[in-house]
Image (cartoon, rainbow, N blue to C red):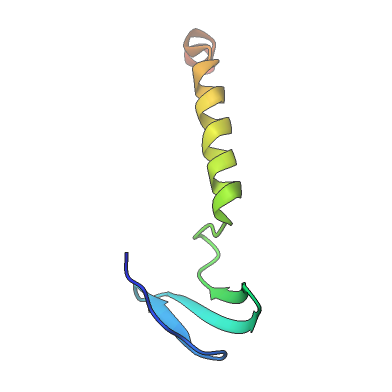
Length: 71
């Protein structure tokens, strides 16, 4: 893990097209702004984990025969 220290108004760049800006710090909370292309999904980790779990559950109940008939 890379750990960086940033102040309000400062940012970090990820790859060539994602910028994370520190908008504010209030106690133990940090407010972030994320600038990324629209085609790159950005989620809080707990939402991302929920999406992954739901996708796995949906795949487990997938009727492959029915999907093949759609072609």
